[in-house]
Image (cartoon, rainbow, N blue to C red; front, side, top):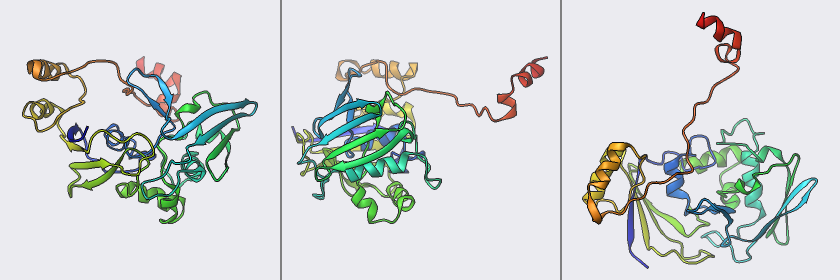
Length: 280
């Protein structure tokens, strides 16, 4: 309990909105996952479980139409004391359902299948009704952004852009952003004194940007950082292994994946006969 941990990330956070196409980065999620609340979390075992710090329950109450009911804890508040409630769910839906051409969101999957998001019981009960069934509903509504802060910065488009341009001013997680260096190479989180769940063990987490993954083992060896999470290139793994018993390391599968995306509306990619002609 107490103390500070310095953790290495590969890139600076240039967009603070994890809901946006530009902000949904692996490094950004590492920095901000302890700041914004999630309805469900993925444990180290990869099991998906309800965030019991935020919710009392989250259940599917009907399959036709598919209906999900969330019960938010009465004491769940943002770090400025404003309750976390249905308005935050409504904002998440409106920002990600793909209907606003002015918003470049990271994904609309699931959100574009929702018919309504309704609050009741002082906003602490949220009812989601889908137009078409969405099996992976537990992946939705995380992270949640504060709707009351959004209202302070204009309409949906303007607030969405504001969240991207500014570090979080309030938190719904165990940590708050306490400082950001002028060049964004260092972000410091501090314990959120108004967190509604179990208090964070650490006093601070410092995320330090090390752009070149090959430099991370050296930073770990020299104790400039306490932990690294690089892509496991063979040479990098060998460097970590060479440090001996002073360093604990773990190699396993992860939840990130590399992928190629093809625009099948491009004639060269969408027309199978074109490909055969090219080969001949």
